[in-house]
Image (cartoon, rainbow, N blue to C red; front, top):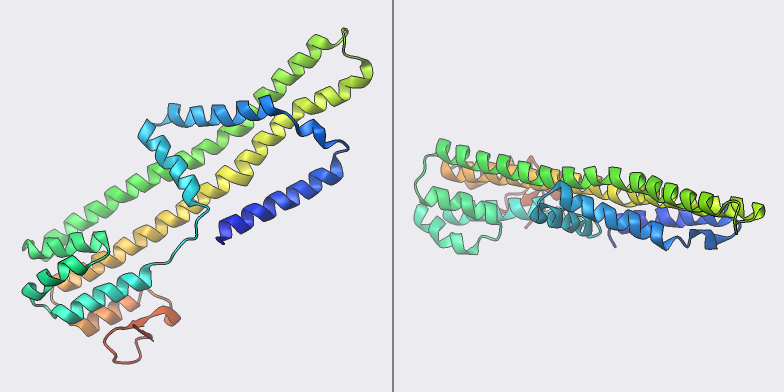
Length: 264
């Protein structure tokens, strides 16, 4: 179970406990129109503020937030060092290894080496691609974070609509004793909006931000690895250099020299 799901469950358990012990009649939360207004209009705003493709990416990022975040840095370092060990600077062996490479960005870098680009050209191309991907991730994550401002606003709208309905009935079929309960129903919309923003969208936005930073760090490691392959550094140097990006207990020892960390 991912930490996001654990946090999600804990947040709603605590909120539910407080609500249950604070509200006399829980039927007051049966505000289906208010809920539909908040959720439906928030989804509509996602499409209005973004292109259809960007909106889909935002909702996909929300779903990914509930999955376990995997640290791939150790696997990436292991793969790069393995390629360095097998090829040892030989372009012909590097070409043979191209089909076995799992990381897409690493494969792009090796392809640039095989296309005989100069090291400085490879660094420039891959750095630009990292920057482009950074902007791509930022647009998705910032779009998700921006979405958090809409549910509270639509919650207030739902509340105002309910209060208008109460005022219309006031002096008619609405009795004085029903005024308080009717106004309570109106405030439920505001609560739903606040809970949606603070218990769902905002935490998932932060989660997406952390995932983006981890992905960009992985690409930085790959860039370093590709540059060392392009300049034909020794496999031992490649291993020790890339191990600098890992925690001490996560460092790899593909070459079996000891001292690098965990044997692969």
